[in-house]
Length: 69
Image (cartoon, rainbow, N blue to C red; front, side, top):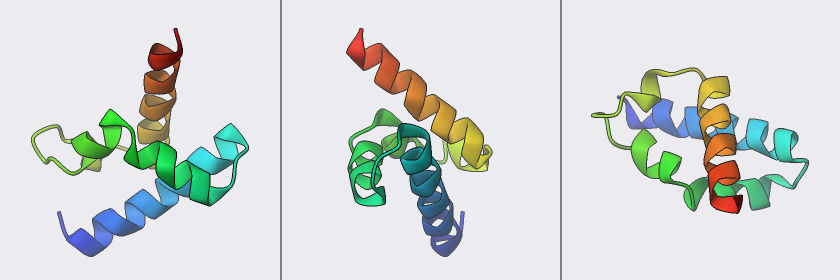
């Protein structure tokens, strides 16, 4: 995937995550980069970069829930 397109996708995901968690985008950036989803989206073997932004945000939310309990 084109790196510019991936960075734009990540930016959209971070903004959606900030809205969903009701936090500042800077904090959402940290949440994203601390997630396993971040690693997976950069690895084309997983195909996560092909999924919708909303799907990726949902995956991050599920990961956060798993880590909490």
